[in-house]
Image (cartoon, rainbow, N blue to C red; front, side, top):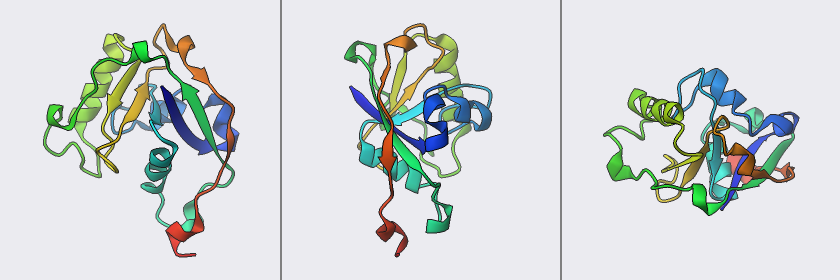
Length: 155
């Protein structure tokens, strides 16, 4: 399965190390836990980026889109909305989801965790555990320039 990650070009070489999530935490992990957040489609990755940007002035310069291919055998049962607690999609995040993600990382049973994104719940975000012993099976592609269309910002 091909997945996508968008980041600043200066972080392209380390984009699949989980450093940002390690430092700041995320919807599915607490600070101190490395996770690589990816999306099943480039368009969803762009929507995830847009969810964190308030204006054109905040768009990071020199973005790149990086594809990665993960063998299908590493995909277990996805987490579906009905598996999640009420409030899972709260914009502020959920301590329960962070706890679920932290437990997934601690168990180390799977390389990836497929979860519904808040921005488009019918699609999938794919979390990758960079500490998993099979992480070397993730084939990270070459970054390519990526720009958000200025019409998103009324420009």
